[in-house]
Image (cartoon, rainbow, N blue to C red; front, side, top):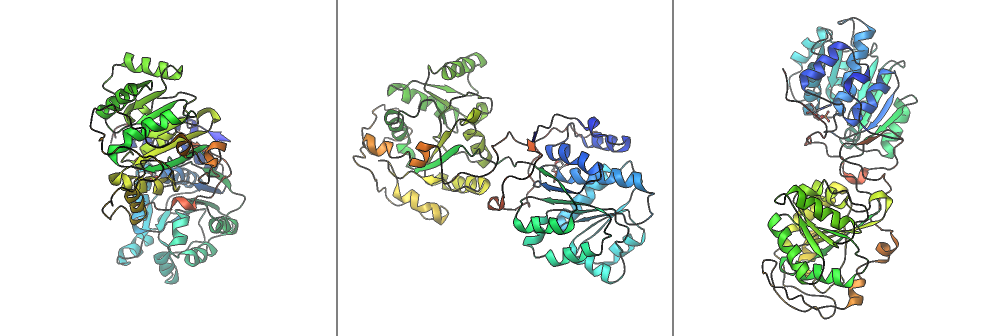
Length: 489
Ligand code: AMP
């Protein structure tokens, strides 16, 4: 089941002091993971949530935890909430969030983390906090010293469970969970799901509900993604050749990084006899609208666009997205290629990669967890650039070593205004670029995951895929994709 995140905080049945705190924070709408998880937790169920840092996951467990503990007992009674998290930084961040969301409640919180003196933490524990945020090692130490007892814990959260496993905390976590009462509510949050996490959840959770927030970097599995290594100066000719030779490119959206280049590429295509137009923020709304309409109606075969306007392009039937230039922000790549393969159709994304763009390509592959297959049968292939791919782009580019037959021309330069399209290569070599996988709509880089969704959109469902390949890094929180007003407090 897919859920949008259209609801507001008011419909989450939050108590007034928490609503006020949320408003103080400037949050206008719940993030998808919040919209999905808060009702489940308030309902008393155990929960497994797949969500990364940056999705608003902390509030997704902290807000309902605060509300439940506020309703279930009196402040200062006993330690009733425990949040286990892998790092000191995360623990402090969670503690700050608890203070923010609980600022109009009387519940108290404390943090115990390693790497600093235990004295002040022990003192804080003596003040009988209602909620404790802890890293596993220090918590076990203090439990061993009899400074903290977990027997009254009603709600336990395992935050960033995948990272706790990666960091070797699994035995510590098990020992801590063993010390919790059997009657409790347990919430497990993890950026990725794996067999190990499932196993842990199986041991520690009772009939958990599941929430999965599709990360923004998820690419639709019906998009075949390929890369072509080419000198910047040859990109124009490569594009012309592709468009001339490959009839399957019915409707192509070509991306450049600058407006200037978008204009120039569109002009060069027109001069080569390919119907093309450019769309970018320098154009009037009317001109953009007209270009889009002509494109959507098939009157213009190629639309050359910059990233800024691309987000508003929602045209069915775009067969190809061609990155004439690879974006320096990996997320832009995901947005760009999401313009094809709409409405369930298959789509192809081709990226032209020059020497400087190798690093951008690496970022994209890291973000999406997909290695782009190379199209190496084309006359403008640059062996030197291709071979730099796996050395991280550090080696200087070697001389061009063109493959394919009849790769004609040299230089030309993306900056020239010349219109002489090279005739290099032959059609069959060109058609050969479409691998059987591409032609049949299957691809080795296909993913088993759900279709890409707009940023921040979530699903509440059983996880459909494992996501270890995407990396479990959570160190650098990303900007949230949901609304926030300027703080009022
Ligand atoms: P987290 O994923 O919990 O680390 O949250 C990432 C960032 O999103 C933090 O700076 C939160 O303060 C912020 N945040 C959490 N929920 C919301 C919301 N509903 N609206 C706007 N910002 C939020």
